[in-house]
Image (cartoon, rainbow, N blue to C red; front, side, top):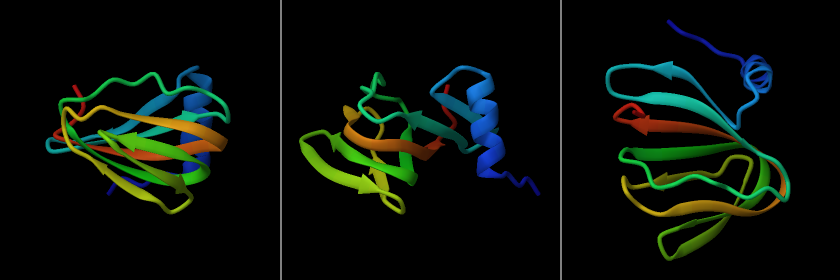
Length: 105
């Protein structure tokens, strides 16, 4: 079993000075913590993997393709591989668990 604590993952992410921390990588998936602060822009580009976002905390919006929705704690968003997507209008610091399948390259 592998178990993780969000507060420890956030501390590790901060110590590594990055917006994204991959903390689990297996044959069929990888999982990471993505952080965007209020007012920050999302620099990510489309990925070759399917993604699922689970919003742990914060508030903002996400656009996937032509569709936009607001997100907050508890939101789950699926993004198909290759789809253009961005978080935006972030009004509270976002902390998002990201599951990639297959694992992020």
